[in-house]
Image (cartoon, rainbow, N blue to C red; front, top):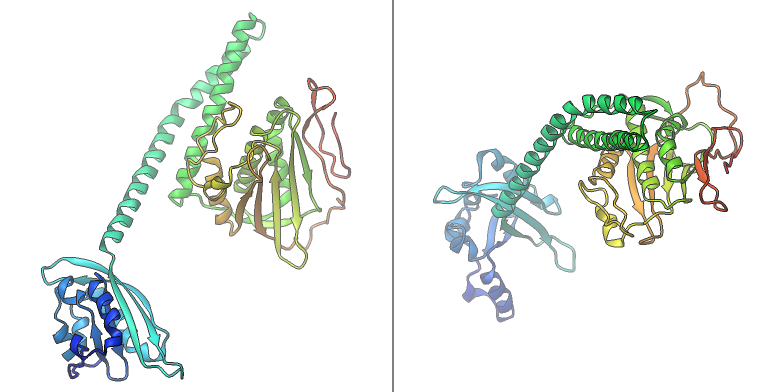
Length: 418
């Protein structure tokens, strides 16, 4: 950018007739459109918005192109100067910077440039558009402020709710024990209290989890872990729920698969996915958890598929967003806050992995796929000889809908419980 150059601005009278539509378009823009010649460091054209809306002086800019830099914020000026000075050897730039108007207001500018070359390919000049994005920046800051307030409220709410829960749980368990031999109505009431307190505890734990992840307080303790152990721990957590809802849990593992991660957090990931799969499955339904190691890759995919209510196509992209819930079908409430899948995504991403959702539509089931990086097994590890799929869980006899039973984990065979 030259410190002094002759005024070479293309005034309206000097433009050929063929450029009249271009001139009319440039005159109507609220963004500043300009043409710059790197070889001479001078502006060839600056649209009227520079004078009209930015309160600048285009004639002064034609005489001295460095006038463009004077109103730029001190912290942004050097970066913009370097970008302009390096235009001749580049393909343009996209920058955001602050600019002070003559009346003292600070505005945010987004500036985009691109090279203009004739058919011969030789650089002719650069064209640029400078757009005032102050309102957009203010909206982004307000959005961040609102999100921060929401996160702080959730953290405070979860903390305040958790404090009285422990004595309530203790009292509910005591009531259940005291009414073991009491009237049926009292036993049922005590069981309802204990069950609902457990449900409330899970909701509060979800709030605490999302608060930790949002505030980056969820610190991982990575170690070399066997994925099968993590999955088995998640299954044990939901074995009783599956039995009570007469849902069959079926797991297929290719053998010992090792990953580097936090065992507690990964257990939480698969626990949340299994909880949703069981919760939305019909009585007698099957939940499949399949671990697949792609050939020639260092990744492992864990798929959790159910035969439940499914996901509407318009919900797939937002299903992992906080407080997003699929509308319950058949009058069946899901009994959650729409937090679990958001926690799943955040924890998987903290492990450097990805999670995705798939569904063919309502009442056609859902599939969630977690992809993680594989790790080499420890050198001293005795490799397990597991070769066949393992079938675990609770299953309802489809021939006798009233029966349900649990099966024992037997790693060397496929086991069906009836």
